Amino acid sequence: MIEVTGYADLHLHTTASDGRQTIPELVRRAKSLSFSAIAITDHDTLSPDLSLPVERIWGVEVITGIEIKADFDGVRGEILAYFVDPSSERLRRFLARMEGARQRRMAMMIERCREETGVPIGVDDVRALAERSIGRPHLARILVEKGIVKSVNEAFADLIGDGRPCYVPIEKASFREVAETIHSAGGVASLAHPGLMKVDDWETFLDTIKDGGVDAIEAFYPYGLAGIRPTVEPRILVTMADERGFLLTGGSDDHGPGSGRGRLGSIRLPYERVEALKEALPKGAR
Image 1: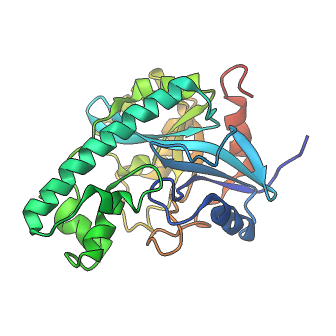
Image 2: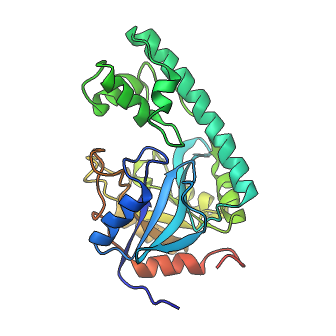
């Protein structure tokens, strides 16, 4: 058995969703920064290059994960899945359903962009940028290419961000269903970047999601690099999470060089946290 030490980044995106890097490119970057482990967490999809819950590539432990949009009893958020089995039929059916929701939302947003700007934009234009999971960043890039806006940030600020003229909310599963699906695929579930969520009562909220099957909290996240003031103080969140027996995870939410979100190296999670996740895997999944 290989003894692993060092650091991990458990929140990374590739070209399977809205990242700018392939898995080999990401692994090379991680290795150059001396990471022992990384997790691939593309949006609502599994990279076709991942066939096992975890494997070692060029000396780096690569964990199969997903970032899944979820409804927390009226609060929007996301759950990170770790160590899931890509062959799980239940997981695949669930992700196919989520992909359908993404497709319907994108068609509606493109139609609104055509109406708002008068510029012809086709679904195929956007899809050409997405290897698998299609999302707003792909549409933003098309809006830049068409000369409608000058930058991806401007696209979100003026047209496709929350509350803007072309925005359409996406259908989401309940967090309970998401957690149950992750567990059925042999994985563990972690609340993604909680500091981005609008929660009125964190004590009650954490009790609710703990009872609903969430195993961990992404307590370490580069809010500062993202120019965001978190809605909950991370130090306070860690204390509340520890009191309730949550595991703690962390990651950079890196989308690759040239994405404006090339943050790999900003979060270095001690590998002991990865070992704790492995210990929490459903029986028979370790």
